[in-house]
Amino acid sequence: MNKKYRKPLIAGNWKMNTLPSGVRPFLDELKTLIPRFRSCDVVICAPFTHLGSMTKLARESRIGVGAQDVSLHDFGAYTGEVAAKMLTDIDVRYVIIGHSERRAYHNESDFEVNAKIKAALAAGLSPILCVGESLEQRERGLTLEHIAYQIKAALSGIDTDQVKRCILAYEPIWAIGTGRTATSEQAQEVCAYIRGIIRDCYGARLARAVRVLYGGSMNAQNAAELLAMEDIDGGLIGGASLKTADFARIVLTAAEELPEEQLQA
Image (cartoon, rainbow, N blue to C red; front, side, top):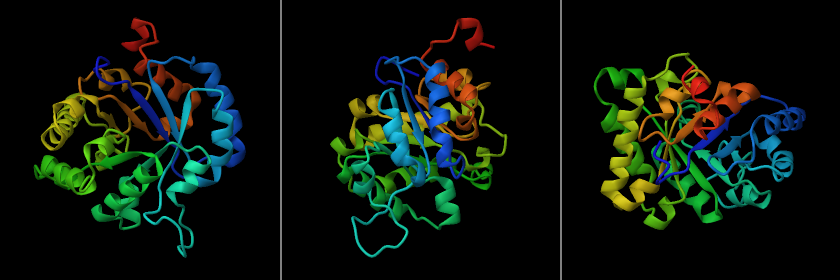
């Protein structure tokens, strides 16, 4: 992390887990574990059914609320879709776009990702854009080329002022939910490359400011090592975000609120 230019962000992705009735107990416990510090942003991205109660319960804390997907359409006859303005109307501030599971299970293309980012930005949301390679692409040496294409396609037609509101998340597909994690050096290499793409497309000032998260099985045990890397500004946390103690430890690590011996444990 480089806190001179960027505030760390830890975002939990609950995926399709936890019942709506579990939101209050989770947030009540989490609030007791993390102080209301200003040195790290905290976001929880929950299923649509949870968002209304979560935004109300999170108002008294510094916890931001995000959705896990958004429609590329404003309004209309699109059964099952949720529009960006529906999210902002209930105080949702963030949205994950282009997660590998959406791309794989719902055949979401880079062009749909681009349209969703535009819709999110138009409504005032901050998109968390996910990019990442498969194991086969990594083994064939295609990681960086694939990442470059995903970013350029996703941000096509999006200007500098809009990109300022975007957060990028590197999630190697081979490390999501598998127990495998990219080494800190592998994660840093790709996150630095992502920042370089932003620099080439939008300039050095914006590249210094944009936040790049790591999203491949970051947990309470490996967070300190990953977050020590210069270009990793936080994490998009999956399984560990469902456990209050583990999620809080990652947040405290990013905020550098843990004692030094615990950060290195």
